[in-house]
Image (cartoon, rainbow, N blue to C red; front, side):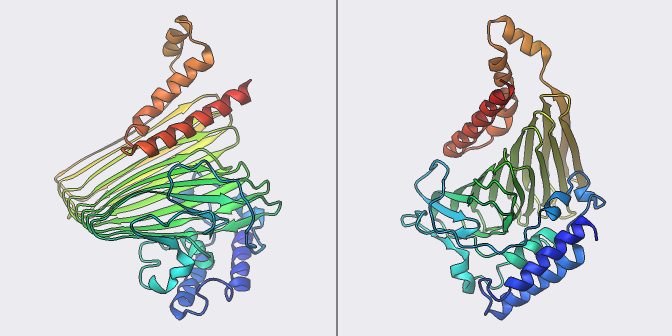
Length: 430
């Protein structure tokens, strides 16, 4: 049996052992949903590199890790990241911690998905894909964040904190987040992930985001998992007429990370921005894969992804824009750029356009290169130390992506994470 098949069998055995203990086990509709997901996961298994979408990312290390033991509840103290905003929902090992959260003053409903499962029939699983990893999440999720912002309400800023607690045993958690904004509602959601575990762990979150007519969601994501971690995340967003989804994802942690974003512009006049950065150190692998479905006319999309790779690291960007026949007057732009800080760093880029409409404006591009020697010499010649000169050039390289973030709080948090990453690189080089 191959490693991927062994890993698949391990998770299926875990599901069989836990299925009567999972939240919602007494709800027939949810039992059926989980059973269908288990069947789909068993049929597909962990994707191998022979699958085109996984050509550059090998999941064998995850399959070999043996995440077979059930999670135990974490009730003690854990180290939380610095507070970004007062309103926050905290999840430890994928489970809601009300004692660490602060949701009392938010002008919308937010809380534990496990406590509101009775309200999610027909909604849970409506947007998520049918692939193996979405099925794995549906099969084993225990909790997650549920958010409902009513029509016309400006929800302000909410921080979603995900923490992996200290552990010496391999473990996995699969949170499911459901976000829904009513007509003309607004929200800024800042999602942070950190970990303290020394042992390997798998964080496999899936988010389903539904934006009603005229709604606006700014969604920032800071991935700073422990060095032992694997993160396989997927976001599925659907935009109604005139809605806006503005996503920025910063990948700076984890041994292996796969960030998938699937967005559907389902109504006319919508706008989708999917931007981000990958900051990779020696031994890290990060894969950003996007799929943008232009299904309605007069919609605009922008994608700018930057990668900075140090040591022996590998980055991947796969971005596809689909313009359906009905999506006339589409305006789509995609750019992926990578900066290699050493000879052993590697970047794979695969931009794609698939267009069936004849009145569109679409473009994409990709570049991979090193720090500009002339620019570095120019700065050094003016008395700037080499480490500071390199930091200035890296910051300038990332600026185009980060400046797309409209929310100042989120932008400051992202730049703080970039500075911390660069400080770490300087420490490793010293």
